[in-house]
Image (cartoon, rainbow, N blue to C red; front, side):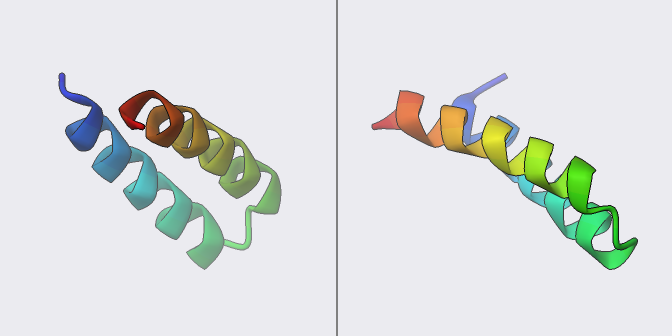
Length: 41
């Protein structure tokens, strides 16, 4: 799995969590996305 595909999956998780008003899960997903983006840089 590439970092880009992982970032897309995490983005979908964030969107889903936000639509369900699950702030804790959205925040955890954002942290995961941040790590992926840092690795890409």
